[in-house]
Image (cartoon, rainbow, N blue to C red; front, side, top):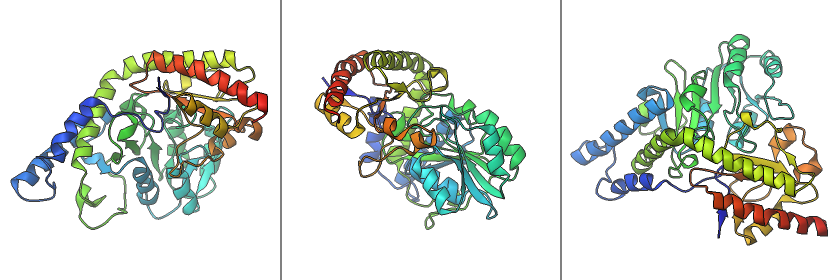
Length: 377
């Protein structure tokens, strides 16, 4: 059997989301920017989806900007939010969709401790170095699953950089936190449908009223002229359907998937002496769906090859476009020794994960590790 443990990269679509989008790929195919009745039908579908999605994430319909996914939402936030004065600031463990734009604009980076947690004092120090126009702090880390204390960090930003816009990459947060509560303290946050059972290629940037945003895509005036381009009606409808189900099941899924995650980690830590649970032993501050550990004496690339042969799909760090293995900047920022970080393994679960997935992983991973350690690979 196959054990799919890479839900943090992407997961299967919920059947209800597939069913919801199908009519908009066939008889309800019209462009919502048109004037005829078919276009009006598509536009109503987008408007209804926007209202429901806003309610699910604790926002107003006008706050929602539909995008092509998390990367576009993050880029739009860093390049478009705030005034022209100042530079962007982010944590050292952000996804590259945040880090790269921050670096491109000459921004500043805030360090983290060995558990991957942003130190409020360090954040304050960096904010005092000069004018800041936007601060981006990830809600849930995509590699380690660490959940940020956004409320505490927001207080630091409001006092140390009161004119800055506070943004959060919440792409990994929808399933594992009450997103409306977690992001109530920020001015803007990014979401991506395929992380919670929707389709790839659609997401949203939430921007609170009164927050300045400069559009990056011009030409059609869609999304209140904040993001031009024909709206992905099938994707938007499917995303909101998936979001509704994920929100309804969130409490139960956190308990169920968290239990599976704990079984998986506990079993591997016993079977693989010397392995280190990334971000510390306290799992209460980590997302229920992400298990991350570093295994001594192995290389991630070789381990993932053996796991795939054993029908276990996992990853070493975040996904990248090429699929090539790269050292984790997240582990580097946490101070994980290079040799140990070479054996990093991320096992991530989601709404469709089962006990069988965990059992299969526990049967396959230890022998694969032992084989590699035996031959020094």
